[in-house]
Length: 329
Image 1 (cartoon, one colour):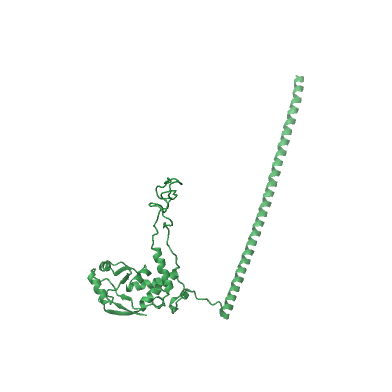
Image 2 (cartoon, one colour):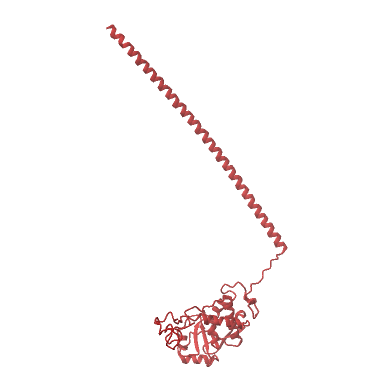
């Protein structure tokens, strides 16, 4: 789809190509209606509240006795039928939030943009930087763009003080950020005016490369349903040559992995055997050393006993010879 780019003097600058997946689909009216209801419901605060007969003050005493007065029986002056009484089934604080899938929201926005583009209600301006911050300048610009007294929504990529000042006194001209993409605001205004920078942002959000979408929308020709969001079916059938090559590569990889595993097991077994032999030799040497130490200790103990016995024998002989010497004297 072709679009003409204007300058602030109302002159045609160039012609650009718009993405058909954003500005060229057939709108889904039911989906757009659902998106509008969701946005309006989410804008509600839900802070309304009324008091029940248990929450209002007073009414604790029975107004008159049960029988004998001729009047209707009453238990409290704060019943719903009394003035200053409680409210039955009144509103209480709650949330009006509604959820909607992201793909459905974006499809609704693309439908609105496509409807506006089909009716020629999307105006592309080169830039607003040279616009004077005066209401008169904005009125002249709307006249030059053939918008006149119609309502227009200006969606800019960045805040521009001169543009906001120029449009602030015009009730039918409103400015907003293109990042918001409010479907309610776009439907409330007859025309949508955008600089060229805003088109790039919209392409980044709603285009085939925007958001989390995996489907290439450039091959989409338009539909009333959500078929645009369906994922393309991937063909499971592969060419025979590719399948055979892939199976052979997988078998080779498995064989290589098995061979590596066997080699690692053999190496581990050899290392464990060497470690066991080294442990056995260490244990044998330790036993031999212990036996030698035991023998040396035994020999040293035998020699000590023999010396002790020789000393005892010498002592006894000396005791026997001592009386004999005394008798001789």
